[in-house]
Image 1: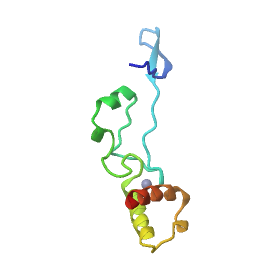
Image 2: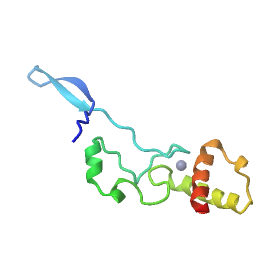
Image 3: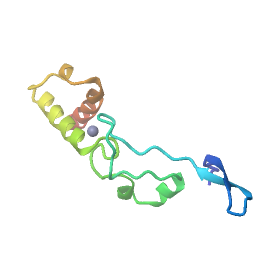
Image 4: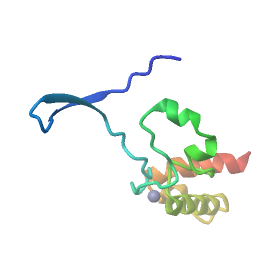
Length: 113
Ligand SMILES: [Zn+2]
């Protein structure tokens, strides 16, 4: 195992007796958020220790769907619909925002396979 250090924050607490103790607090990791609308993703896990994530199965790590753990269901749907519209030439890729374009292009790459 490679030594993956977890950064800890030192917090000085006083016990009821008046003694000083140093608590080591793990730094909070940011919760996964949608890359387009920045809303919180529910299915994706945010484990503080990478080893713990590894112990879980793939489906426990993120929703087992396209862009699972990257986009929220709303944006995912929008991206897929826009991608199919572009594929059917009913929409122009220039009409979508830059943020979405990246995901739409990746859907189009999947569709063209
Ligand atoms: Zn979203």
